[in-house]
Length: 422
Image (cartoon, rainbow, N blue to C red; front, side):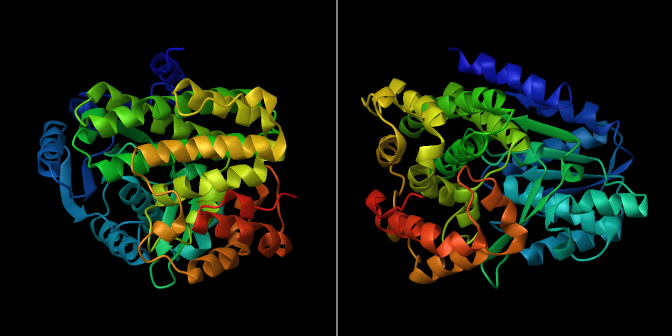
């Protein structure tokens, strides 16, 4: 199947005509900005080569007749709470007609929440969870600012989604705003911005795209949207599995890089159709030692084994993708239940090994047993209940120590046999 064409058709279905993407679309900023208002604040990442693109943004805004009131440095990794407060204060100070974010997931996520605080007031804690921004907008009769979200990394798909991840660095815990109101109204992704991305960022981002597709697929087994989600997940996962190793071996393979950009955008579509679960839930407690995408990618093979008895159809499809890519020769049709899950998990781990990606938590510098304890405690937080409910085998807070703890221990040691199935 031509998954490039399939992805483009799915994105058209997803975003209609509101999304500007592809190689060389940066010049579209003039047209987009001209319809947003007279003034803007730019929240911007800084990375090797970013100056060239920021200069283009400034030129495009000038051509559109937009006054740039300020350029605000973006947040640190994982969107720290302190950076959110700093950026929100800047937006309150300048009161722009619209906001622009230029960066990866953390920068776009912080800009989403900073505008929430600027427009609606209060503290971010009251907006964590699902639907609280929309509720407050309704109560106050207000709406958020137009948001031109310029993505720079093939990863989270933050420019397309209703999620804003914010991290309390003091506790090492990440929490999540989930609300349609924070979806950027004006997303743009020029794939060429990713062409010099380093190996580690490329891997983390691409495997984060798989995590989005995979977790939504797993959680949708009893959903009326299952067939649609399966189509989306197959497209996104296939594009990563077919192209990630090509990029790692040849960073100048721009066609393969474009495919990874499409794949992670499809991952964003997936998480707008359904919710993530196990891998993402655990990742929130690993933010001090792992990037978000890396944490999700490392955890998903282990959750795959736990979920296996409930997701056999999904696993046969996923296993087939890895088999077509030459990563395994297993006959998935002959396996069921836990054995099927183990076989798919092993294929996922083969890809990780071939690209030099860690496969167990005890390979991660700084990881300790305290991370397991913290993850188990966090999973019991009512604000993260959605992740437990999205699991294909839902577990209650009371069952976390019985079933989630062995998953984390298995991930620590790289030992699938430690996982207990219900």
